[in-house]
Image 1 (spheres, rainbow, N blue to C red):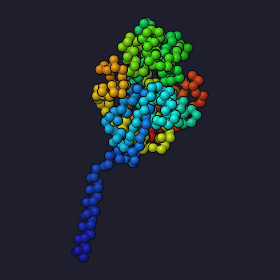
Image 2 (tube, rainbow, N blue to C red):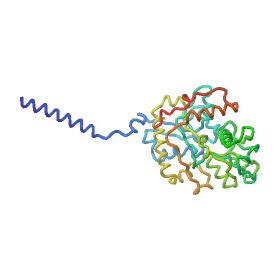
Image 3 (tube, rainbow, N blue to C red):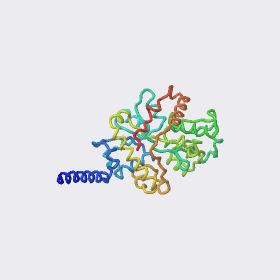
Image 4 (cartoon, one colour):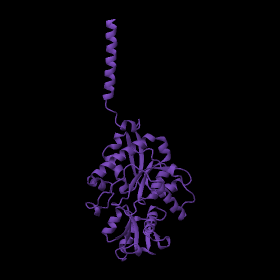
Length: 327
């Protein structure tokens, strides 16, 4: 009897010890549940723009590898080339914006926005409406009836209209001229052959360095200035764990950049994200934490595109913007 009692007490004690040890064991890192079981390769079409910096930092710092991902960057020279490689399936993801997302999805859902890539803030603009230094224009009122160089049917035209309307100009006051190439817009502006143009950061800083004048930027209306990270819907459906891991790595990289924006000058040079004349003076902007465009932002772009004849009917926000993979 005493032996049996001793055995029972021993079993109970051992059970309690096992429970305590299990409770004290370290929790597995988040990566173990975020990373795909097998290595997955994601191909990203990349323009030479600052919006890509968090992805490049994630690669440099080994974050993709830590999440069991392989990421291949496919350089493209224009939005048109980017769209071609996405449409052909040569790339899985891209930096784009809500205007192009509407065009992709107007007939069927081809892509989904999974994250903001970059956003304007009250202290850090993303898009600028500039006047030629030779034009004498310094105010929004001075732009009434003046042709502004833009790329038509793009975020550049959208941001131009919305910023000027927010500052009191009517649609009839706003005149634009199509100059699709950013390089041509800059050259014509610097030469005084364009009185005004809309340019993105950081090329706007180069234009300013060459004599252009800031008339308006989206730091005053940051709800209009942003870019997004999107993936083909087929890729998302086939590799949800890879998308989740990719965004977790980008989130870590974003925090690294925001914690020390001065650390990445070599990477900016290597990836040709900033024009050489700006190196040493250009300040890396803050990048947004995990988030997606709001329905109000989506619907505002829809309304603008209908006004311009670019869209005939609404495109579903809930089918086009997917926040479920954010860390």
